[in-house]
Length: 112
Image 1: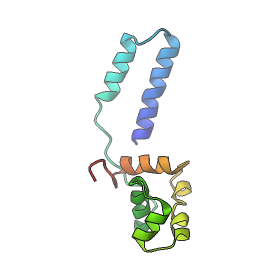
Image 2 (image 1 turned 120 degrees about the vertical axis):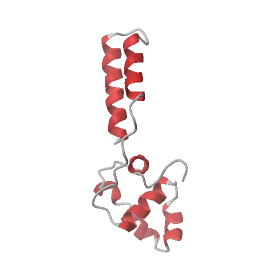
Image 3 (image 1 turned 135 degrees about the horizontal axis):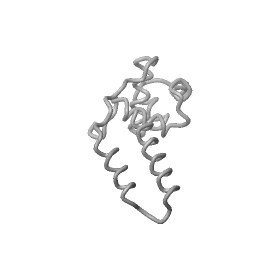
Image 4 (image 1 turned 180 degrees about the vertical axis):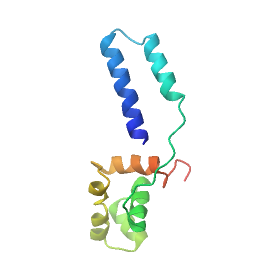
């Protein structure tokens, strides 16, 4: 997933900067170019979620509130909040991580 990919790049930069304080160096530029030049990983659909949970994930990524999702899905707000249990199922700490997952996994893209 891109989140891990970015995390690896950030860790590499932090390590490099810790070893050579004082600003950007040739090594920093090389690390950035290495990671920036890699193709984006292929989207991987989250495993173990239902079609309805996938719908909730997409709506969360689109920025809808629980009330707006309930209206669009024609279910109660309480039911939406139960579906937001995806946080646990997908090992996400908050809605922001669900949004990142949705973009990385493919159900949502900047153009949709």
